[in-house]
Image (cartoon, rainbow, N blue to C red; front, side, top):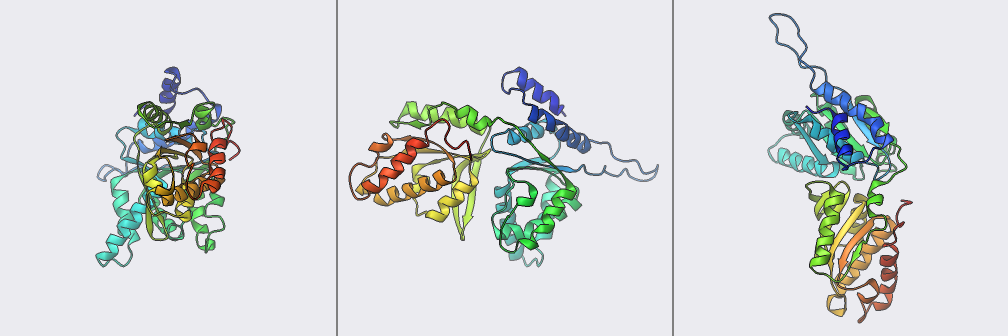
Length: 357
């Protein structure tokens, strides 16, 4: 295993990172967990098999967006090397759990959580979750028993979040049934806030171009470069379940999503879908916005709704488009209404936009 602090310092020395006091302050927490995972088995006598060491307490790391929480968690997982671990976005993990529970019920299993938790525990010693947040009542109703089973099996959990544990599922339906899960987090995980004045995600976009036109090789190359910088590694699709339907973001990592205009506006999505996207992502890279007119009126309406949702949620938008905002929709029904969207697209290009979010 590589020392977590040494790995951090190596990346500072290479120029990949710059030292941050708030990040340095939480590195010992990650090293504590790494040391615990690699501790020697406990000897119990000459004729008895050595017992596995007790699992170290996990870590719940919360704080504002762009402070480097996900980056530190990735660094920690990289340092573990051979320790069976998995790094996954929390929402994607819960979707997998629901799917596995459905399959268990199809086999006639009454208590579907038990075998699903056992399968997870048999595959990993560490689960690293990016962006724990709970907005879905179906998630809220099962996480307590699921995580209790995982902790009982010795699985260590590390997670990042933008919320303090007491604010998880805030104002949610039947929240009183969820409160024991919050106490479980506090019992099994050290809760640490990472306070830093620097928003590195915004820093990387500070003064940078975020709206590229016309669509073509140059715009595509710029988008690829920004995506590589912000995502920081291999991405995977993110599936959001909205009122029984699936909304798929083709690429997602570290709060950054990448999709084409057709992915989000060429399909029959509505306001609820776009609100779900806006709640889940911090930065959206939207590619290949075409010229809009009466010929693609429905797609244009969806685009307007999408921009409204992103704007209200202060999601940072990076996009490639066929024309400048004011020239995207110049003829046909809806041009007057589109003026507000064009104005918002302009405002969202400002280097300071969204920083108060």
